[in-house]
Amino acid sequence: MGRLFGTDGVRGIANSELTCEMAMNIGRAAAMVLTDSNHRHPKVLIGKDTRLSSDMLENALTAGLCSVGANVVQLGVVPTPAVAYLVGKYKADAGVMLTASHNPCEFNGIKIFSGDGYKLPDALEEQIEAIVLDHAQKPDCPVGGDVGSVSRAENTVRDYIDHIKSTVPFALDGMKIGIDCANGAASRTAEKLFTELGAECHMLADSPNGVNVNDNCGSTHMESLMSFVKENHLDAGVAFDGDADRCLAVDDKGQLVDGDFLMAICAADMKSRGKLNKNTAVGTIMTNMGFNRFCDDNGIKFAATKVGDRYVLEEMLLEGYNFGGEQSGHIIFLDFATTGDGEMTAAQLLSIVHRRGAKLSSLATLMTRYPQIMVNVEVSPEGKLRFYTDDKVKDAIEKAKQKLGTSGRIIVRPSGTEPLLRVMIEGEDPEYISVLANSVADTVRDRLA
Image 1 (cartoon, rainbow, N blue to C red):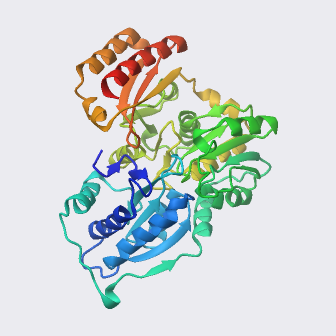
Image 2 (cartoon, rainbow, N blue to C red):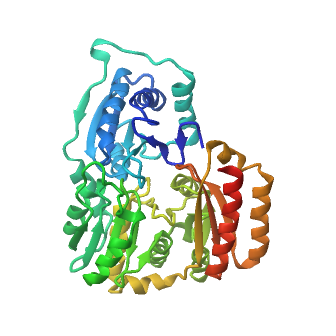
């Protein structure tokens, strides 16, 4: 993790940690790093989610980009994967998304995409950091007609919706679904998309006011959608986060269907149709052990990466795989997208349910979930660094591994976006792994908080 960039872009409390000055400087640096020096006026797209601070940061970022000669095209409120897609469609040199994903409204962030629609590799992020923090390269400041311009794209929502629809071979005619937009970017796109696909849509959390994004709604707060689907006898429900790059689902019984189950359903379907490259699905070290068992039982290979959809994508590109994702609901269909796309995931999932004439609850039995406990421990920045060297923390983790043996596993890792260490244990006995996880968490808290 870099000095500015975490696992998913730059993130912090808007106007405090992520200031207008920083946004402007990141805009300048990104334009310098991502565009050809011979390109007089590179085109950079900017999208944003529904946070009140997004307008403020958009203006600062726009000023920075224009100050080094870049032409800015503002997309308005759109999902993150729409920016990634539209970079290519609009033949832009780069794209930027202003969002803090699943975090509360006071946070915001900057995600940057290169001209091919992919998130930046570490090396380019480090170049931007060096310009912003170390003043490693002085920006040219053009004047007169060489200053960049600002325009507004008018058809972003239509273009993105048409793209998602083109990836779905089977319509959703007759399906009744609940859709939780997290009061975020999906509020602009989801109802229109799924209605046009033929579904009867029941909307939740689709009235953003700038401060209610992810507020007891969306993919991090599934309880309301679970109750709504069950009480209204719907076929399924889908929930997105603030920037709609992740999706979780609810089955017809009102039960949660998390990213691991979504991957199992989609991977099995793709394999049955000969669409799963090298019969391989890519996940992370946090993917539930039950998914490994599912892969073994269904002739699918499983490749695990570090946590973060960027690392899942890197493995897919390196090895020629076309499907992967995370338990959190970041799922990448590389045949259609260059990043995780919540609405695409939902469309693919619901299409499978409709085509097979099966209940989502029935399809989800493909995989059996191992009990899993996650304890988040708030730590200081110094504690986050000491995690790698503290002997007592290492000893507590090692003792837990020995107690679990071959019937479970423990993973302790720093969060890439928050001041947390995450203690995760899987095993056969829920009560036992809960006690064990909290014991390790107590040691982490004592040593690193």
